[in-house]
Image (cartoon, rainbow, N blue to C red):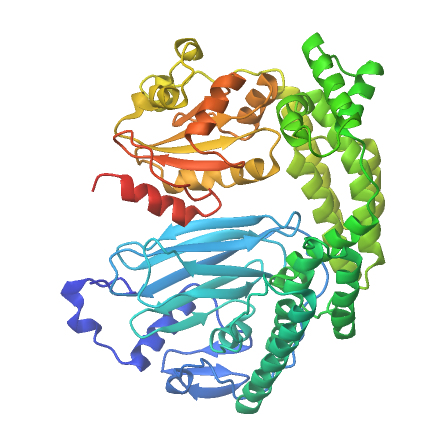
Length: 623
């Protein structure tokens, strides 16, 4: 058994402390790291000073830590910080578990991507994480399911640059205490207040039934809020505004979700009108909270903007016509086979009646590989961006929100367009960014993202050979394409490719350079590999319908050319045979192979679900 303050079984008798002693040690630890509660003074005589009034520690040890004795009407800070900073979280866990793992995350302001860390407690039951932050932001922390605590642990904390926080998780008694940081009072109020009713799924409901259900949800939330304020009248202004904002997010989410993906026969415009009639009276886009503290708001505003742009969208150029126009203008070269495929696809479209040919299959097999060629892909991305991004920006400019939130959301739109497609922004889009975004830190992030893509293309685009792997590593054991060329049976082909990796668990990824979700999942692979570092795992990639140059470029760009990664971009017939054997029904598809070479039944978890992937792989490793 381990104790959260680092004592072992030999010291168990000395650690038989009451609550008063535990809190005293916590306060001492906080003092050592130079942190204290906001407007608070500490002494080590079993008291704490809050708002210039001394209180015995015992008054702060109830379930709702702490019940502050006076009001706090401090508002939330406004504006955007001048530079990026970091926050440090130190965690002590008092648990009977030998192992415990925690995931900590913060969303970045610039692109709304999530910075995530998976950390295990050490032999003393503690760990520390340090994460980048831009102004006030929500930090999430939860216990990983692979090595759970006795009690489920999931918490949100508000942090700011320069903060050092100490979090004590008492798993044995199901209590949590937090010390330090600029938002100590708010965070402790949040930790001690379970105010939300269970979220009701509305997937199968119509928009009218969803609205009725959400009105009921809102009423229950307000009843709980009134009861909470009556019981605890000194809850801070920051807590009250956060609570109200969170209720509105939960209220809006299912309705806006339906607006983005209407069911068959539903009018997207009508769905949006009904949703706006519910949301607009709430002024749901306005809040005192900084954007990065509005947990979930980024998602629902993205759904709202998506629905608005979808309704206003003008149709994009047909991709086969687009490719042909580039060819005729002399901007790209097509060989005879590619040119014939484009012409044949145009003929199919001209004669398509919905019952004589599978257009989607022809598009995937013939047009996507051509569209994925680097130069054509860049022109195509520009074509889409030059239509979509100005429309998104115009929608954001028309929304009734504060200018700081608007500017951050516009920055995220530009960043997602550049980072998401991995292409250099067109001059028109860059000019638009410099017209619409004014804060130096935000504008610099856009320019930096664009420059990173430029640098990569200049340095790596024509270096289209994967680095030679180290001898003896899994990558060096790759069966060559030449050895495989006579095999046409999918099972035989797969078993020949995986044969060198007996003793390894193989994580199979079937993907394509043309596939947005595939590329998105690749973003999570470095963290997954770091978590499984040192374990006998091979990452086996089969690329679908992708040109050789685009395939090799992507491997280099996304740092997938590691010693434990094996890549194949097989001829179409062989790749199709393997996909049939692996029962691929969509992209990406993930499968697992055990250490004996046996293909496991069913799909494997996606890389974004790191804990599930790790748990599935560790089940297959010898113990």
